[in-house]
Image (cartoon, rainbow over all chains, first blue to last red; front, side, top):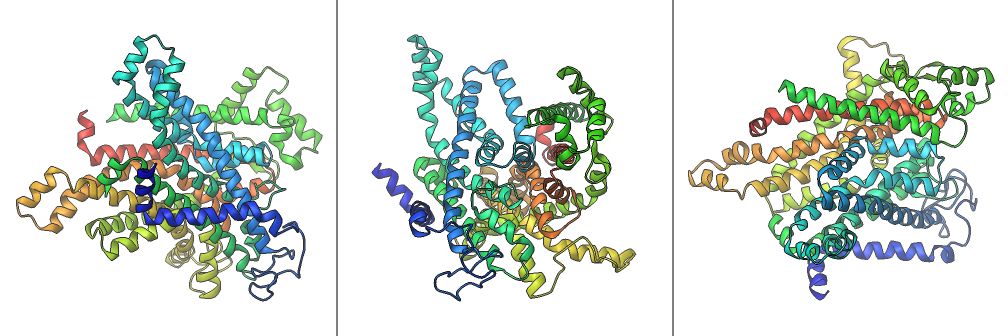
Length: 279
Length: 322
């Protein structure tokens, strides 16, 4: 664990990312206390420019809603959807990769065809179609992001399993009569975890981008204030009010950047041999 | 080569067929009456139209029969009728396709050229200030939401500086012809193509840099250096040529995302392509049109992938042998 932290902290960007992400997470948790007024409520005159009134430092939007409160509530939505949809993608991708890599042969063939199909289909277009047809809601958004983002997980896990499959300890487990299920979950899965963790941290970043893109297109959950929705709603008034789209965009950019940096740091810390080779 | 292309075409056809089946499934899985889904929200009130759709798609028959009817339609390029736009879906899409092709191709060329160039530069000066600047920029572009950077480009270059048009495909009502018109369209193309290409530029830059560093440690590069070849020759003739292979592969795989990104860019810039059409279809709840666009964009991706696969074989003769 100590080793892990030492290697992680050598990546300065990753530490910076971790600090920023901690701040965002904290904001997400204390938001209801900090901003008791709903972000949907009109609190001031519309189009109040930023830095004019201390109480509303980032100004208000076309309907007089507090932009700062919107950002804080948006942090909750982005993090929540980013995490849960990544979990959903892992839940689909890991079993498929494990089974395909472990059993090989025809099973592998069929499963990889299936994976390839989802990898070829334009993912953003598929996500749009899924959310539109099943009506925008937090559930359909999470499901859609999960469905379009699992293929890299399956491919990664399959590759790892293929290289572990012929190791002696796996063969020993087969000889000792363990069931396939035990071998896969006890012997193989734990050894594939570190690349999965790295990939997952990057996937949370992509999921946040994807969610904001969907909300921007008007496919966000109508009951949740999100960063993408704020930018989408500001699109038509961009000439009058730059701040309405500027601040939420910065929030997305910094959060995604922080997650990507953390992913790089995790990669350095968990796969030390690999990262030294690349440097 | 011909056999290879045929095999790949067969595979692409299989994937297209699967997409048609998926579309069919989606229409039936959607909440509500399939006919109402196909008609879109507004069409749902018109009893006559719904009845016509029911008859056309045989909605009173069994599911496999319905799937067969649906597939037959798609095979003859009949993607249904858009009630909202009062036009066949296929006509609507083909009308808009050239604008999207122009946009995505330009973005692809811009991002590939600039991305690899920046990657080579960074790798040649690895560890220097130039490398840090290029790498940091790539990291930022990689994390920037596409639609946001497009909006910011409109504010900066179109609204504030007034350098470039930030809206539409050409100056409406100007009546330009010939070269004048081409230049006008090119001016309108600059912002959408650049903002769409930015993310991919970052991807190609990072890939090129990593690949260049990897290849530059291989034995044949050491040999070239030992022979006393000029560093510039080694960089471009030896390292670059070999380092480009994974980048070409990646570029092919990214094609799908390029089409997806076009939806966002076209929405911001009111670029009259199928991405903007998708946004309009969304706003009007025109599901039939939406699914048609999804099908055509997937077909575009398959075509893109096929082209890069062939390019790959041309670039690397070793694959042909195996």
